[in-house]
Amino acid sequence: MQRKFLSNLILVVVLNLLVKPFYILGIDAEVQNRVGEVVYGNYFSLLNFSFLLNILLDFGLTNYNTRNIAQHPHLIEKHFYKILSLRFVLFFLYASVTLGAGLFVGYSGKEFYLLSILMLNQFLVAIIQFCRSNFAGLHLFRTDSFISILDRFLLILICSVLLWTSWFGGEMKIEWFVYAQTAAYGISALISLLMLIPKVGKIKPDIKKTFSAVILRKSFPYALLILLMMFYSRIDAVMLERLLEDGDYQAGVYAQGFRLLDAVSMFALLFAGLLLPIFSTLIKKKESVAEMLELAFRILLGISLTVAMIGFLYQGDLIHLRYPTAPENSAITFGYLILSFIPISLGYVFGTLLTANGSLRYLNGMAIFGLVLNVVLNFIFIRLWKAEGAALATLITQSTTVLLQIIFAYRIFKLKINFKLYGAFILFTGLLFGAYWLLTEQSSLPVFITLLTLLGLAAVSGFVFGIFKISDIRTILKKEENA
Image (cartoon, rainbow, N blue to C red):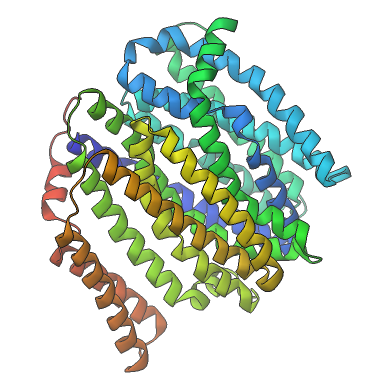
């Protein structure tokens, strides 16, 4: 299992490194530069609003299906079209409730129109994710890796034409960006479905009331968890836009830092996509998850600590590298957000383990607490510090909720605390802070040189302290086990 995880992790990271950072920092960021903070901030708020009730569209089916197919792969042909047909029914529920909520909060005209298209995009993404859950459940990680970057690759092609050719008069409209997403997601969803046909048989719409009721009942705990986590991770931009007079502008500032966080967080998300079926299989076979958990924990915490610390210490230089005219509070906002990468990463490890185990009662309790905490903090901090306050609320909420997840995981699985490993991380962190102080306060080296030096030191000290291991690399290079 460790060999399968590591070899496929390398593949999925390489593929995503080739595509997603360019999309986020090249395409998405360039769209904001072209249309401005106010217009993009309004779009960003609407996008996050379309996420809030996304659970009505998914209803926990993706996570449930990944876990179920990983443990019972023979059920894919029997269940696939029933669940796919159910998704179409759920789309009408999601669309009705979201549009009603949009009217309630005051959206109208262009905002209402954009929200409608964004909801369609959410549906297409849900189809892609459902297909990917089947690939992951069958341990077809290479196919899953290809699908994971297909929509972004297509979006890069379409938006490159819009942004850097004269075919459309050299201008960019936010509506075009939304339409481009619809085209990319639609093509990707179609290709995903076609690739699954050999596994599930010919297309046959199949809505069964009894089956749908049973599946929805089983997936409800997953649905509740996703709903709660979606609210406390996506409500920041909506509250910024609604609570402040300059809400669209502040949401745009927040989006600049959030985009960079999103760019690095996608790698942690890749871990979750690989870990869920692997943890589910280990648990079903009643095998220990300790070694797999430590492997993912070591790699992800080592990477997230390095990225978060360097991002925080060089917050001004990094934010202005992509946004030369960004206001001062944009850098501070990014500084808080990039520190959130550490708890977000750990959440993808321990939260995935708890999900695979079906420990939804603990996770939902944690998520309810996280939602209340996040809304209260946002209500207070946004009024005091605007975008910076929203970012600080995110950091506090993510840190608190992941601490609860870690405690739950250690208790449920009766894991032993590896004091040596935790001590290594403390030394690793202290070494990087000390090196930063020496490089910036005791020398006059250019920022670029000090940044590269810190990255190199992090890599070397990671191996010295046992955070990264040569044996991990040897395992990756070995032939993948058939599992």
